[in-house]
Structures are given as structure tokens and as C-alpha cells.
Length: 124
Image (cartoon, rainbow, N blue to C red):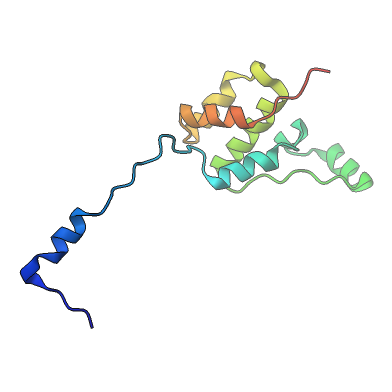
């Protein structure tokens, strides 16, 4: 059982001595799950952005290719699509892809952070 000495005003004096830690200058704008999507999308091809047709399904069955699964969350799927396009197109990324990412709820600071995380494919 704890004893509280109200005559000495211990609760207020104890709180006055607590040091307030400074907040970090930079707060990450990309959540950990979004970072995982970025890492996973680095290996996806342009073919993964469209629905497989009959020929794609037949070739997949014949050669054992497995298409990249679309993500269930529309926000994360927009991020995956953006990462694939940014990796393949680099600075020639269509404005529609950035608009799609903004419509999914990402802010400009997060988009800049995502662009820094995506390696651009070399032109050779």
C-alpha cells in the first residue's frame, strides 16, 4: 500500500522535476506496412499492373509463372502500382500515377520519401 504525504505537496513537486524529452525533428511519413509494400513491389514487373488475359493465364499454366497478387487494400495497391511505375519509368513517371497516389490519401512529403526509397532501373 502506498502512502501519499499531502503536507509536503509531493505530487506537484515530483512532476516539476520530470524532464520533457524533445521530439525528433523528422517524423517518418511512410508507415511500416507501406515500407513492406515498397520492398515487395521492387521485384514486380509491369505485367503485374494489369489483369492477366487468357494467353497470360495459359503461359502461366504452361511455364509455372505466378502473377503478382493484387493487394486487398486499395491504398496499398495504389502504392504498389506507383512503386512499380516509378522504378521502371524513373523521371518519366506519368502525372496520373502521382494523382492516383494522392487520391489514395498520401501527402506530398510521403510521396517524396517513397521516391527516395525506390531504386530506378538503369537504362542499359
